[in-house]
Length: 145
Image 1 (cartoon, one colour):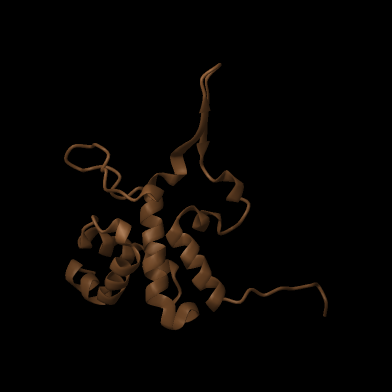
Image 2 (tube, helix red, strand yellow):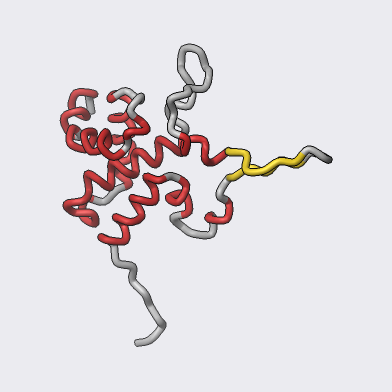
């Protein structure tokens, strides 16, 4: 699919993305559209129905944040000061001490037991999870006939 076709196909998703993810405003439309195109197969139109565009925009913002899109300026390879703070969330120092040197990182490992664990790592993933709960009803089997 050409860049123009992708832009036309996901025009409304891009508009929703821009509305819900102002922290990622520095990322150009071409990059965002590529990420939307990569993420689209992961978000079911059938399951989300009228909330599909919003779900796709949230999942795209979530994946971009986790991937560190925009963390470095391509020309200078230096950290971009305008980045959202949660882009650093997966590798942030959470504590340190001086005597005998001890450093701990906040990597959210306590959430890895959950199949949707990475969704809790960004504000966009948490919002996506909320939409998921609204639209997808889990099937519980108590083992009874």
